[in-house]
Image (cartoon, rainbow, N blue to C red; front, side, top):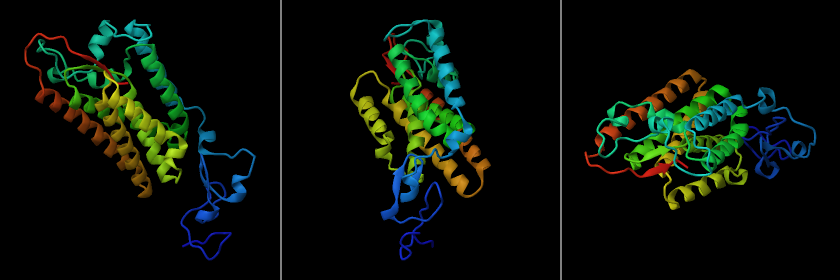
Length: 288
């Protein structure tokens, strides 16, 4: 095992993220790009990182654009409120509706598992989700790459839909926050792997605050949030394990299997909890 370059008697498995020299715990300085040695942590010159080399978070920006376009198509440009357009009604997620035996995921409308993740109930709803997505995307996408980021987002969206159906199969659910929670989970897993304290980075605090809000405020689909969080963290973990084994293709296969499993479980959940044929207006829930 390598020894610290400043304390040769101390063995260590950690190296400076900038110069690569082995460092012991007393010599480690936590930075946004990983652990650095005392000399590198004092440098004021710009460091070339993966973020610098990749450029703009293009997938993040594309996802924000799609969400904004879908929101505008709903025709509900208000601060907060439930849209009533056909775009919203045809795209919102629910397993089945009481009194209507023809609609919902239970009746073959599987596209709702995806489309619901791009619809929102008002400017506050989409504004908050897109702001958090932009902040996290700027941080994570340049580090892991566009393709992996897009795959993790897709997996999180589908596992978020599964979580929403498990908790409230008869309520209309919309919002990108299931997928955004997945990006939070992925960022936390990646930071832990890079030995960056999750709570000090702000991501851990962001997750905790949003979970508290999810479980305490009415009308929020906490199932969608938790489902997305777990899905994103699992997908990121799969990519990390595959990278260590130099089998990246297997990571994409595994993520495809997770996504397919989420879709299958969502359909099964919707069918098993199919609403009885009683006339009742469903409660509406937003994903965040």
